[in-house]
Amino acid sequence: MAHEDDNLSFWDHLDELRSVILRIVGISLLFGIVAFCFKDVLFDVVLAPSKSDFITYRLLAQLGSIWGTAAPDFSVDMINTLLSQQFIAHMKTAFYAGLFCALPYMLFALMQFVVPALGRDAKRYTILFVGAGYIMFLLGVLLGYFVIFPLTFRFLATYMVSDEVVNMISLSSYMATFTSMNVIMGVIFEMPILCWLFAKLSILTASFMRQYRRHAIVLILVVAAIITPTSDIFTLFLVSLPMWLLYELSIAIVALVERRRVSVEA
Image (cartoon, rainbow, N blue to C red; front, side):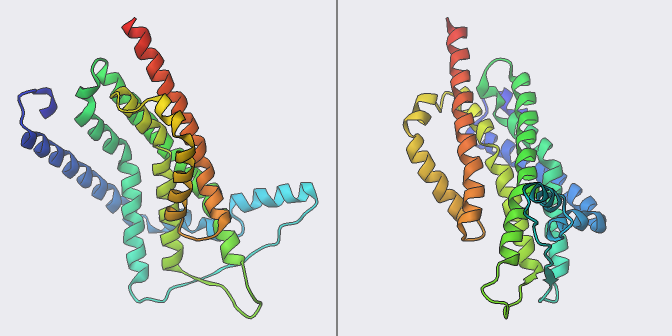
């Protein structure tokens, strides 16, 4: 690996990074092609939150029956208005599925590129980074898929200003909201892992994060408002709350890294 040679120039490191990116793209395309071939399975998963028998809605109905409030059934008509939109949606969805499957290798390759800067126990850091990074991304996607997106979709798809206006959701609108919200939630859940990495590199400190906690909360609300595909307060709250909790978790992780560093130096 190029990083193991301290005599490499800046351009040599850039060339190594280019090779890493090309390998990541190749693996992602390979997984994407496989996902493209399993169209029925792929879209059974993607379109599941648009149906009233989705597990999240059934659980809400059971909770409602316990509390004595019955949640009404809902039906949403999905339409396609562009000639090539279904094929494009198929390609985009397969591409995102390929990225998701290739994420462990992506994290491993990127970590191998920067791991020499972490000092000792580089191999252990790589395994920890890849494993924890993928788990956190998966948790973010699962939260988006089973909680945030279904609740947002049901709220917005059934909201009506008048009985004379019928909601007919376009496939492109559904897919754009679905992919963006789930990918964004996966990336947001990488916050503790990135903070751990920055703490290992002595770039980030817990005192800094505590000092600017209020600023971070404001920034979280701003970022949540920007990345939220809809403009309602309901979705904004669903996105910003996990971000704040992850920020608090990141402070604890950075503080733990600092305590371990002090104990080793002592």
